[in-house]
Length: 344
Image (cartoon, rainbow, N blue to C red):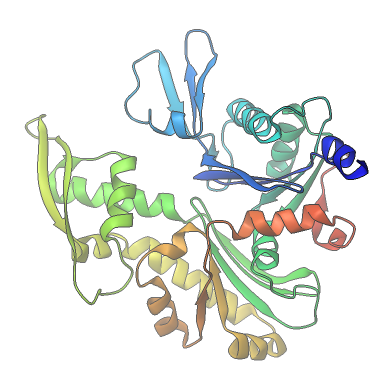
């Protein structure tokens, strides 16, 4: 009976507020929501038409009076009001019927976030109904999520490739010893594909199509057997729909610039790492998480570039929110890794 009563009132929430997807973990229940960070708004009434999966299906297909937008850009809030609406809706979905108690919320943020951006995240969560807000750096949350011993005096290196940012950090004693945060991720890869197809074929494709191309035939290094796929878009010369076939070879070339930016950032982090922790990384390797780590042959490329073992986890998309959930389950134990987000 006491456990049931506690569950009714304990509705604390962990949120991985990502550029591409928002994942919500409720204390005692695990991951309860994983939806795209997209909101569709009626421009005339300013009312929300759809959030998450429903809104993503509208991207690039809306009439003039409806706008489907991604309020997160490069891992941080680009549209404060829409982010607040999105958070409120996701929290409502996650809590189901328990609306009478305001939750404590732990939210992941990029390690390179500014004080202004931290305040924007905190204010959005408070306006969306949070009782208390804590922030945690994404690399630490990811490391906790994959089970790395972040509280020990030994180096753990993690590279988290998300939709808007790539976070690379060396973690020891509950803190980030050195980190590199670049605003390059899955979105920049999609943009590179759109640009390549536009320049090469005078064909305009949307972001959703570009993402599908990346997932279907994209790669960071040569494949054992190269792939092809058929794509559809609008011919910029004739102005009519057109179909063509593209290969994984040219998509790999299109992705070269954002991928090499990630490689360079990884090398920079290794250069900055203290010698004693470098020895630990040689022994343990680098753990790779985030949706971007699913790109074919990326692990192979990073191994070749660094001569270090690269370990990709089984469920790279959920590592950050699972780590945030562990923090939420025992906030007192993980107090040192949290960034308190109270008012000054």
